[in-house]
Amino acid sequence: MGKFRSAKTLLAGALLSGLSACASNLGRPLSAALDRSQAACLAAFDAADRRVARAGVGDADSARVAGFPYLRVDRLLASFAAHPLDPQQRSAWLARLAALDADGRRVEMAALGAPTVALDECRRQLVASLATNDSAWAALLRAATVPDDYRPLQRVLGLYPLAAPLARRGIARLQNTEQPQPRVEIPPNGRVYAAPASPLEPLDLTPALANARLDPLGFPALAAPVLAALFAQHAPVWVVASASADDVIGTIVRSTADTPVVAAPPSVYQYTSYTRFEARVLLQLNYVVWFPARPAVGMLDTLAGKFDGLIWRVTLDTDGAPLAFDTLHNCGCYHLWFPTARLRLRAVDPADGEALWVPFSLVPAPRIGVQLAAGTHFVRGVGPAPAHPAIPLQVRDYTALRALPAPSGQPRSLFAPDGLLPGSQRAERYLLWPLGVPSAGAMRQRGHHATAFVGIRHFDEAYLLARYFTRAAPLQGPAAR
Image (cartoon, rainbow, N blue to C red):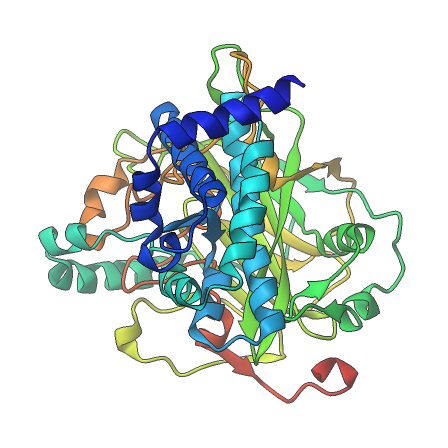
């Protein structure tokens, strides 16, 4: 009953805050057709957004859609707005945008200790209205975009045309000197970490993905147990050279001082993503680990700072087998690709930006090992995981980072509303400022990983794989559908 009264209060208060504000926010195509209930709903979203902004608890996991406060979008879904959608695709796309907003609202309202029931009901009303309004639909297609994670003004003021060639040469030197090896070795001071095996293993899970039902947009529909088993099957084994406590994989928690720290036990955070390749939507499995810090080497180490970590990503082909592997640090830096023999690198225009970092092709193995250096956590080797007892990793959903329990009471996100991790900034941001990446070197929330200093490139681009790779040979069999 208390939640119901809170929902009514939220709606009533929002309505009193001004229906004219919501009409201008939504834009003329839809606001002209609003009834009183829909106008009140829009005002409720407007009031919620103001409250979130005042508290500084906005969730940056996906982007808000200007004029449509009950929808959010990511780069993959934004790519569908550029192509005609049939009625079924239109409905599926709209449902996914609504689901992203519902997800973001849950995180924000939890941080405020407020219910979402009124907003959830309002979202259903507004989505139903939008689905039958052609002029509003056209406005939505134009608005459903994700801003890139670069600041053009920085590039203008920093004389980017002069800075970019210097940066390109420095990046080329880094790629040449920090090349990983196609094998994994356990150093004398090394620790080996691995997630537990799935109870469904050693079943062959390839057919589960190859035969998965596709929704109208082409997303594979997988049952939660099968998806969990896929994560377990493709999970990497982390081999970490350890010189200090900063080389110990951990779990992010809030301390008694209400600041985030990396502490025991060791964990891996998982999430799914998707990419578009050859007119298909491919599943990607993402594994994220965190270290307490990147320790300084000497007095003038501009790369050192609190928090460090990596993402290992596996892109699965239409037949369920690995198509490509790639990894980067949680700052968006040091993005390395390990394609399988199924892919070949495209000839890329040099004007595209900095060269893609592709050390070698990787042959899939029952377990892939990722060897990391001490301190820098650079990737030193990738290959079949060595047989060795492993420290077990607790498997956690990446969403846990967006709702960390806090001593103050309400859970709050690890990340700020701009997608950056406060306190993780590096001194290198001053040196790299002309290249337009905000706070270069700082840890970032998913969806905010700019991966190139020269040009524009994002880890979650819808066509990133297709931008740089093509299939080496046609895929054979039913999965090529």
